[in-house]
Amino acid sequence: MSDIRKASEDTHQRLGGYSRQGPNYLHHADFGRVVDIMQGIADARYGPNARLASGVGNDMSYSFYVRDSLDTVRFYPDGIRGGMITLANVDAR
Image (cartoon, rainbow, N blue to C red; front, side):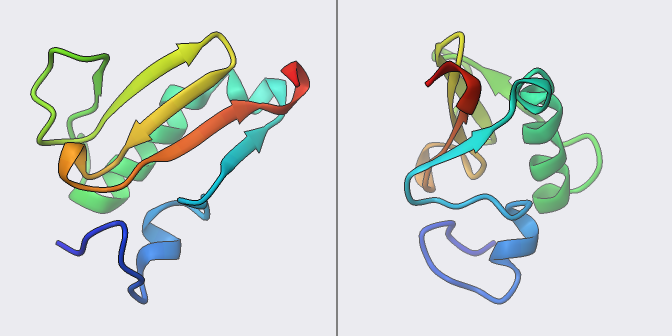
């Protein structure tokens, strides 16, 4: 499995087009589906029904996310050993 911090030819596809650098802004309707979006990325990286945990205190060796506020989420598709993707609600800025 490639590290999210390193460029690879399938990184763009496997991250659903989201960037690792800077926040990825979603409109309110899309941000309402943020958990589905993260589950889709985890599924693309690890296969159907990949595990996706919420918050700290879970097994952080697989995909997890931490909700910083109602409008911002930090997503770790490769668990704690990989990089982070920030997803934010653009309508809350």
